[in-house]
Length: 204
Image 1 (tube, rainbow, N blue to C red):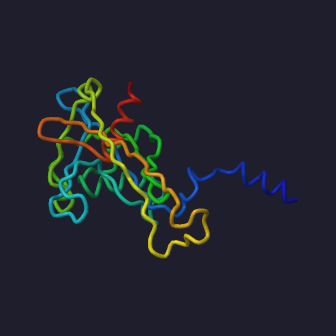
Image 2 (tube, one colour):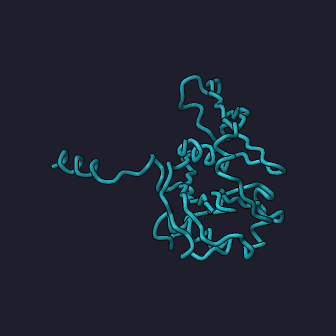
Image 3 (cartoon, rainbow, N blue to C red):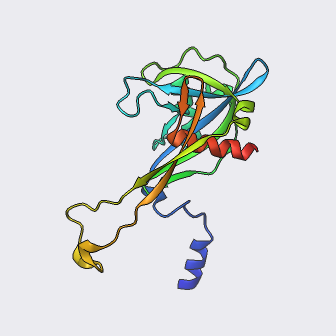
């Protein structure tokens, strides 16, 4: 009985990773628009009045709400709320691999074509401006990388007495790759650059 139940559970759809159910889950859209009969990727600059990451370049997207039927629905909703693009103008082509920055944070990226362009009705409380980059330019551009070292820092209530070597335990720092794309006056980096790099590699 136990083995049959275990086998059935293991053959059901499993979470993407351990902790996915309790992680901060968000979804982003990579919007493709046509400019002068050429495909471009649409980006937004976060409002300079935003509390978090003002002025950073991002894709439309945000937290998956309990009312969202799926990550894809969240990406469509956020694209509508931030850029004023009607859902009927958004044609989702597919989903890319999720970006898991830690067990507590995951982003689900989607790619879609958007019929509505140029964008004039974006939410100015969240978006400072929008711009596009030609797909051909991205395919030929070589992004550059810098490394950031992250050192774990246990809090004061960490139970060192329960682990070997106690407070002398050697915590391993980890290296984070930060990729950069420079396009005119814009620099794309961080989470957006990681997802963009995967998108470009997927096309290639």
